[in-house]
Length: 142
Image (cartoon, one colour):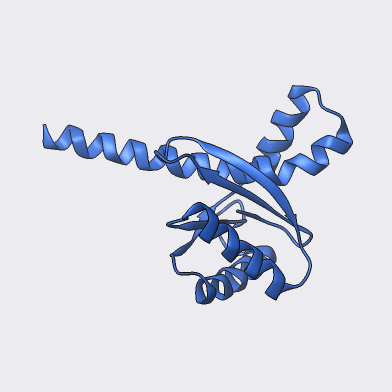
């Protein structure tokens, strides 16, 4: 999930946990409604873990936005049956904007898609990390 004050970018992995696919961006309303909507998505897709992008500062420290994300993640954790984990998301929105700009889509479409693409990048980074860890463990076992 790419957390924003106006929108939440959402993505889920395929059944094998290899690729991330974007879901429709959630336009934020009230916190309670946002959390209930996410709970519905968790149930619908059988989500085992929720990753929330954490916009830490360039040196890894907390920012005003990362403090908001932390509070949101705690409230989300109280509602969901699965773990909620913060993931460093430094530069994912920048990377999402760059990828969308290079794709040639209009600025208006880019603004609507950036949150979803950022969520896909956060999740894909996590899936790639898990795959690398799995391969490293296999290498040690052989």
